[in-house]
Each structure stands twice: as C-alpha cells, then as structure tokens.
Length: 219
Image (cartoon, rainbow, N blue to C red):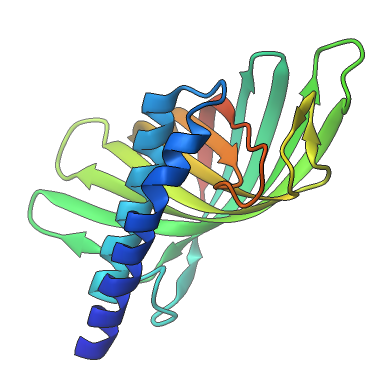
C-alpha cells in the first residue's frame, strides 16, 4: 500500500507539472480561462488526491455500487451550439474522505452528449460525444438542502473533429466538469459547467464551454 501511494503521488505530481503549459495554451481560445483553469486543475487535483489515498477511482477495489445509480440529464449551450448530455452513474463503494462535518465521495459516469448548431450553414451541423468520467462530490453534512460541489474529468470521443465551425484536430478529447447544487436521496439539481478540449495533443485546440442545468434521478 505504501509503494502504491508513493507511485500515485509521483504520477499525479508529474501530471500537475506538465499540465499548466497546456492550460495556458488552451486559454488562448474563446473559453473562459479562469473558469476553465479552475475546472481542469480541480479535476486533476481531485484525481491526484484519490490516487494518493489509493481510493476510487484510482483503485479497482472495492469497485462500484450497482445499487446506487444516478440517471442524469444536462441541458445547455455554448453560444450557438446547444447540447444535451445524458449519463448513467454508479457510486463508488468507498468514500474518498469523511469526518463528522464533511464527506468526499463520487461516482463513475458513462455519458452521451448530443449537440447541434443553430447556425444556418456551419461546417458541421451536429454530432455526438461519448465519454467516461469520474465525478467527485464535496458535501457538508447535516446542512439543510444538502448542498454539494462537484469536480471531474475524463476521456471523450467525438463523432467528428469539427464542432460547428471549430476544428478540434482530434476526435479524442477531455471533458472537465465543475458544478454545484442541492440533493437528497432521490434527486440532485444544480448547475454544471463542461469544458471540452484535447489538452494540446494536437493543434489547433479550441475549447468548447457548455453551461448546463443539471438534473439527476437516483435509484
């Protein structure tokens, strides 16, 4: 276990050291650079913390809880591009961190995004994005309305390299999430920001930023 934690910390540290130039380079596009950077750094930091502890999603054991599922829908837009994101999530069996007042846990989400441009004659009118995303939930305990804050990021596959008129160079992208809302044992409702770019795997690398209303049904 000690060796695993050391290896995880080194891996996460290397990723964080390599990532800032990519974030700054991506920030030259039309994305909101402050929100984008906070989302990417938060997602990487959450994953690095989980790997350091040897907890999900970095650990395959104890795995996911198929009795705690969430079906969610996000609807939003980036200028003239509208999207709907549908996802099925399964909670991790183990919390990442917990004390008497606060808990960090999360779930894996398998997502399908459908997007369409409202422009009359773009290079690409519509498309689909498939992805897998670990989503971390940060929640205070014993507070009315059960507020939460979330961060996450994972690989995404686009049906085309063009999203509307933007050449995103590669079909392989990364999707980073930042959101907040309220939840109970049956529902969660909130705001969710989604940034999609390829981390400068290939240029050009324009970012796409969807601002969404999020609704999740737990069962």
